[in-house]
Length: 283
Length: 127
Image 1 (tube, rainbow over the protein chains, first blue to last red):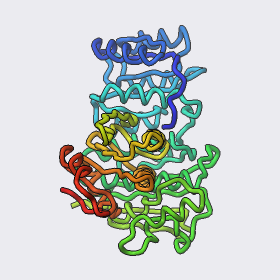
Image 2 (image 1 turned 90 degrees about the vertical axis):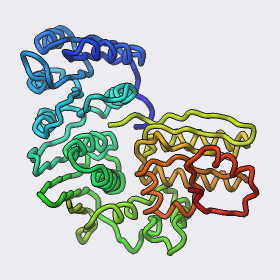
Image 3 (image 1 turned 120 degrees about the vertical axis):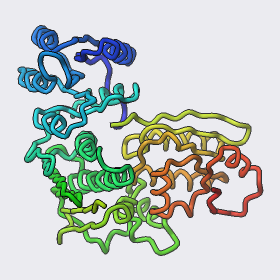
Image 4 (image 1 turned 90 degrees about the horizontal axis):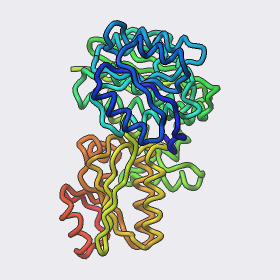
């Protein structure tokens, strides 16, 4: 998000796949970082004890010690590195353990080469170490409390969307879009992009429905005064709200609620409209 | 997590084709796209085709920026036309009714040809 963070971070790649270690090392060195690598957890721990690293790229399926255990040990260091998990393991248990043990984000292998460079750039930002508090990390009920920053929103999405990986593409994309729009609204308008304010997110999975709840720290809004949103546009004019946004000095946008209404089965706000739930029914 | 916005430009005598890839989202592609189109408009290159086939995600801010730059191009005597929408982007255009604003094409040649054909303020979708 935004401009790329400064390069020159110290990065440790931990993966038993020598070819992948080499490929990632070349990519990240070319991006200006200082890169070292390890093929297993003991070698990685030895390096982590010898000198500090800013970021660790960590495979979950390591020999002799799981990447999840190494994650916990790395995060327990005096100067813990930011840890990006990489795995072909799609189980929700691995994902949830990563969340619980303070992983920065979760990348599913294989991933496009550019992705790793961009994710490392995000992880190198000064606000990247902001913690996401885990209230519940069950596959059926994930609940998180997080600072109101866009970087954190992206991280939360990386976790939540992996939990939905088994869904059909249409449902997955609809839910992902709706979640992204409402979470961004909560963080930008409710939380004013203030890292000291918190947003609370619950994702509940039943046999026949997905239920998401997002509570922001703002005062809510009056839906009758949303002239700057596309839902207020007259029939046949889908963009007249953009003139209102320009008058009010708001960035272009305002399509989030209109999109979300069309993408989910239920969209319900509380009275103040600083909490919202949406439901997607499964066939 | 997906890769960030990248833009590859092809200049034809009268039309500029921009191939966007990655995310067109709030503070993540939208500003790069805005600045890129602003530069083209400043050079009076106001006939623009956006190839969106490799755009992985678009959010409300991204859609807003698309419309904002479409209006800027129109104000300067040109327009922005869309090419190769993914199924998801196409769906978003439908549910926001932006499909009634943009001309949308599935083939680049048809998009380019449309600039050579006299237009009468048409906003029809060319599919």
